[in-house]
Length: 207
Image (tube, rainbow, N blue to C red; front, side):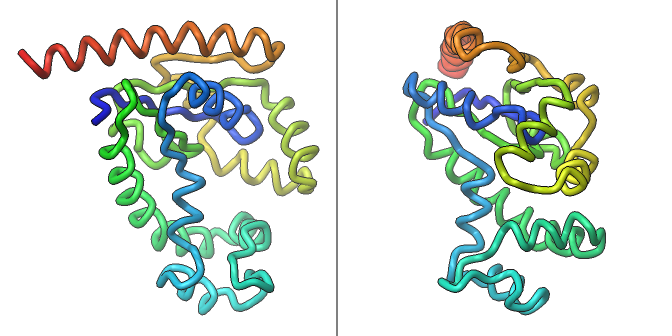
C-alpha cells in the first residue's frame, strides 16, 4: 500500500493529464477523478439511470453511454442542474477514489483531480501539486482541444476556484507555460522529492 498520497490539480487546460502521464511513466500509480467519474456513470449503474431520468435522452449516446459534452453544456449554464448532479456524483466518486488510493502499491500514489481544492480533497492527501499556467493559455488550449465555445470554457473556469486560491493550497507547483523539456525536468525533480517524503513517512510509521 502506498503510504504517501499526492493530490495533482490545475485549472482546465493546464496540462494535468500530461503531467500525470509523466509520473506514470516513472512507475507511479494514478487515481484519476475523471476516470472514476466515468466509472460511476457506466451503463447499468444507478447513477446513469438517475441522470437519464432527470435530463432525458438528450444526454445519451446511441450506444447507451453518457454524452458528457451535452451534459456539461447543460450544467454549466444551469446552476440548479449542476448542484443536483454534484450531489448525486460527488459521494460516489469520493468513495471509489479512496478505495483505489488504498489499493495502490507504488512508492507514492497520485490523485489527479481538477476540483481537488473545491471539493476539499486536498484534506485527504499529504501534498498538493498544482500545474499552473496563465489563464489565457487555459482558454486557448481548451477551445482548441475540445472545440468548445469560449463562453463555455469561461463558465467552467469561473466554476473552478481562482488561480490564486489554487496556488494558495499548493505545497508544490509545476509551471506548464514552457517547453516539453522544461516540464519533464520539473517532473523528474519532484519525483525524487516525493520518493524521499514517502520513505520518510513509511519510516515514521514503522517506528
